[in-house]
Amino acid sequence: MGLGKLIGWLRGTREPAAIPDALWAETLATLPFIDALDDDEKSRLRALCQDFLAQKEFTSAGGLELSDTMCVSIAAQGCLPILNLGLESYRDWVGIVVYPDEFVIPRSVEDEFGVVHEYDDIASGEAWAGGPLLVSWRDAQMAGDGYNVVIHEFAHKLDMINGDADGIPPLPASITRQDWETTLLAAYDDFCDRVDSAEARGDSSEAFYETTGIDDYGAESPGEFFAVMSETFFEAPDVLRQAYPALYAQMRLFYRQDPATRPATADYGASDDAPEN
Ligand SMILES: [Zn+2]
Image (cartoon, rainbow, N blue to C red; front, side, top):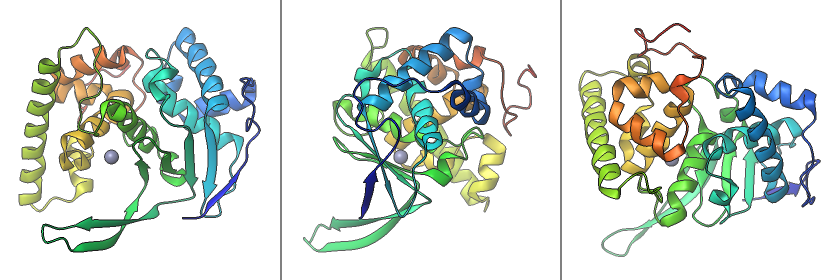
């Protein structure tokens, strides 16, 4: 994989640089679920982004020319989950590699007979344990529609602080591990049943999304479910709160945010009876 050169107006500065007003306003305008934060949250998020940009290293790949707009947008989306958790949640890694579009990840898997199978995976994002976070800029720009590759990958990063991306990140004192596991796995099992039923009916992934407002990729594993539900939690909180209220309550404690109390920013398939405000 050919990594591009480090660029960006904040590169190399270890002193946080101020995000210009116009750039911040432009960023919020493209991210309605962040624009829905109150003024105090927005100013704390902006300060957090500035620290984040000073500590992380953005790299481009695939011929992409990185811009300030890209870096600030990715920072804003990636810092939203840790608005009340702090930047130390992302302390174990530094690099963010931005691709123009989906990218190929060469994989190799050894089977039970010791035979190594090599294949290519097409991905819109990837979070390496202890290593960089990879993201497709094209996909990152689809934010706001209930699909958010940036929040997804950063949720994996939080999950991996204590090992595998298994859906069980380090929990605050307000949540017992048993409660988290029971709640997450009950919702996951139900979600897998819903995905299975949809598949049995011959429904496409798009049809499933239109009906539920949730990406069926969450049925891959409990770790993917946590990452997908984190996207839903921040972008379409009413969808998650209605589908899995107990999980919503646990995620509210985990992220120490209550996005459902913010002004609704989008109309999702599953939120027909959601308030209009
Ligand atoms: Zn994932």
